[in-house]
Amino acid sequence: MIIRLKCKNDILKSELFWLIMLSAFFEPAYFSKIYYLDLVFDVLKIVGFIFTTILVVRRGRYPTLLICTLSYYLVIISITFFKAGDIKTIVLQAISSIGTVTTVYLMSIYIRDRFMHCIALVFELLVYGNCISVIVAPRGLYRFITVTGWWTDACWLLGIRNSMTLTYLLGFYIEWVNYYINKNEKIRFISYIAVSTYTIFQINFSSYILIGAGSAGGLVICWMFILLYFFIPKKIPLLNFFNAFILDVIVFVLLVFFRIQRVFASLIETFLHKTATLSGRVYLWERSIKVIGDSFIFGYGVEYGRQMAHRLKAAASVNTTQNGFLDILYNGGIVLFAVFLVVVFVCAYLLKKHSTNSEIDTFVGYVTFVFFLCCQSESMVGVRFFFYLQLLILSNAYLQELNLADVIDARVVAHDIGDKRSLYQRFGPASKSIK
Image (tube, rainbow, N blue to C red):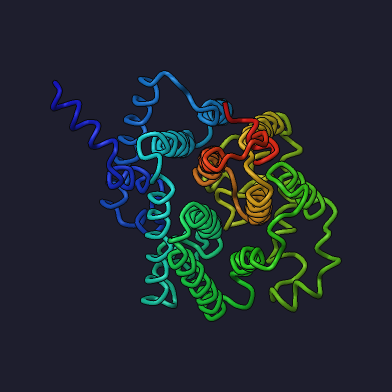
């Protein structure tokens, strides 16, 4: 019995074990085209979901975001069921999203001091693997064909060009936090930036050859926003998660309903090589708004590809309206959108609760702004969305612990040299949290 418990504890404290567990939920898109490999990942996802759920239940403590994720998927699965939609797809997505949330939560418990390092490894495998696929197959690794017959060759390990955006963004956040925690990881951080930058601009060049100018504009412009972070002040008042989200909602309204992009038509055509319609997305948004208006309360649920493409009159739109916010309204109406807002507001509250300093708040706010900005032209809610929120909550809580630990160490040193000032005078407001 003792040996079994020891083996169990050894496994749960193994970085390799959690690396495999988390990797299962981030299956590269190319692998889904290989039947047996895709089957292995599906099995790993289900096993991982069951295993982590059992562990969380046995612990008797349920992370707040897990409850939020369950609530979101309970609503959308119910709507999809009553609308006779694609139950299989949304249930599998729910399993992956919930499994990801619980896995990251458990990693922060069992490998507390190494969980960011382990997560960084997962995304490095994805990003560096994608770089290799672009070098090996610059004209595309495979052809992606939808059920409606629409196709593109601009696909690599991580899938279609613009669908990679959030993976690169999440990787940047993880590498930055890992470097913030351990300054010895500087080379690792710089390497990620360099490889990602090369890969993204190579993808843009390849897409230009395969499709035409501006075909990977969304991926490029979002990565340029990421690189811009190194040239802005590290502490910007009022820039935090909540304010960044509100700003993106305003951008959504201006883009979709007021067509603010027309004001910047010349810039869009010059630098992104696109028209003010953003490769026809504006027309798709118009049709989506009209369709959403016909089922505004509950939406249509998650539909089968042909059904959605037929409704929107767009062969490429088999699972998205090409806008993350519109996707939520299309799939679940204002009911699901209200649940989505609750999830975001709960995350904002927890981040404020674990706020460490203005530099971290600024970084989180900036990355969040870019995250939801990317979702203005791509799908949003899914594994990467809930993973991002859980990552923000856990990493900020961990950074707060490190910050308080530094203050405690400073307190001991000050005591040793006979500093008689109060803790607040010496270390500021952060010391109020120390008991």
